[in-house]
Length: 589
Image (cartoon, rainbow, N blue to C red; front, side):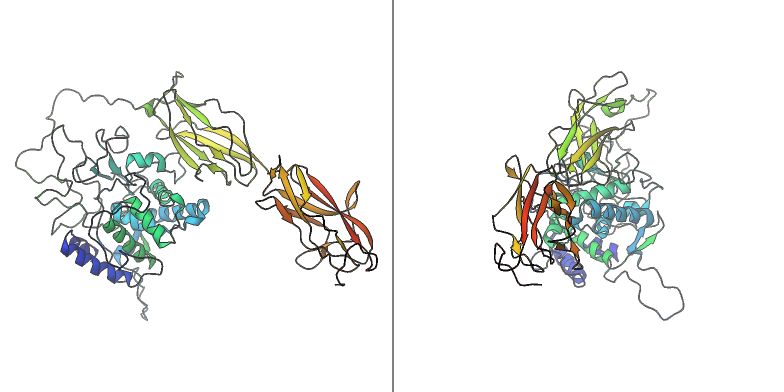
């Protein structure tokens, strides 16, 4: 049924009517907070719409073609049965290959930890993976999650698609003239250069690996502080991946379908969609596992000629996905005839020549919690002869359990080396967790030993602490102090926010031992405590202590407040009978 609906989604009046009916049927069972189509609930044709936050970039895929099949209208959850026969797993379309499904769930878990405010559901990655590549062509991946053969979309030469000239020297897409979308999540090389991630911890970020691609897609969808539980942000994120209303509606349809239930199937056995946005065939042949967006001929065209019928602009019906898009011909295709001349040798890319990384002059890395490091991390790529290598991507990764990150909150940054072979990482900002942080530099696309840098995050400090008022602090025995102690901590004359502090009832000015009688605080169980630790000033440097109480002991007592950095303040407390108290006491507790 998915292929049936997909073949009916065509541009034009009929397209709009059919798509609207199909999506409306799907949206009837949607959870609140997700919409399909515009404000009136209708879908539009496949024409592109601008994302609400247009950054001018071509998106993750360069708006490459995608599968347009819609999910079946029935729920993937199997119906309850009173029979003793085993319950079937569900509709074939609900099956997701095991390794692919594992990659989506691992990406969701990683984003839940690194960007909890994004609320990325793994079902969204599954929906995009379905639309982009039919779940890595039905799960044709090896044990590590790498596709058994590259998934490469049509070249983006402006002939029916976006015009994106080569940005990777053909490293990922094999095309040195134009870019092509690559891998199960269909990233274009220029986007992968900064969005790529290492999702399976093998030291590489490979767009053809489903673990790497799924994690990269998750980070891509979570940028700009988007919250995907919000319908507007969800729409923005999907449109930023491929700027088409039809794409948005198709992804949302699969998202809701997968939310209703899925099941795991063996790798390589997944069903493939049968229709794509760049085809116009009214009766495409059955799809074969192992075919997908890589099907069209992606070889660069010769100067002055057009590529194969990739743009959907031909009047001849194109082949079904998985076959070359050039129509059959009685004459041989224009190819280089056999020759006895040996093929030209492939010129090594700059990355191929890198032998090691060197510290390019990075000094001591120290910053106070919440502040930016003044020193930036620098790495230099060199050959085995010590010669600098330019135009090499260096990946900087903040390791471990820390909230220290690069500018923008990212823990990973990719930088291209300059003419001197040096790459300078973005500014590093210290988090609130103190201690040592490790940043690793690696070469993208080449296995060479990484380079590690140690950065130290010190706690916030104050050099002065004073009371915010001069009210007398007094009460009667067994009573409660009417006034609470409030202080202001500063550093170099500025408010010292989020500074750790302690408050202790001490024995004497020259004896910091805890006093075992006199005023006290109360803990959660209403028991007397005379030391409070774990206190912290607010963003304005202010700290208001809990209420103080007095036992039956009269006299003058001392409260000492100490902040990180060594600033101290000693405050006098008076406990006296009502006729001798220096200020009006409260009644006994």
